Length: 60
Image (cartoon, rainbow, N blue to C red; front, side, top):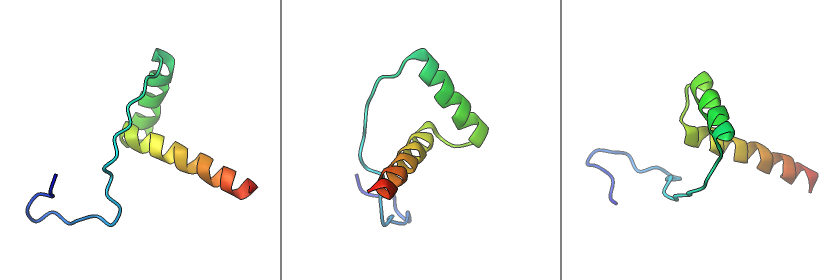
């Protein structure tokens, strides 16, 4: 999909789609964190991955 006219092209576009299942409790936690931080659920998940990635890389 090409960007809309006038839209800046990002250096690192978010163009990968991941689909997964979670239970009700995890969904409630995700909603809570998302609302409290005023960010999307996707951003909460991306941040969580980033935190774990950094922790694991430091252990190497």
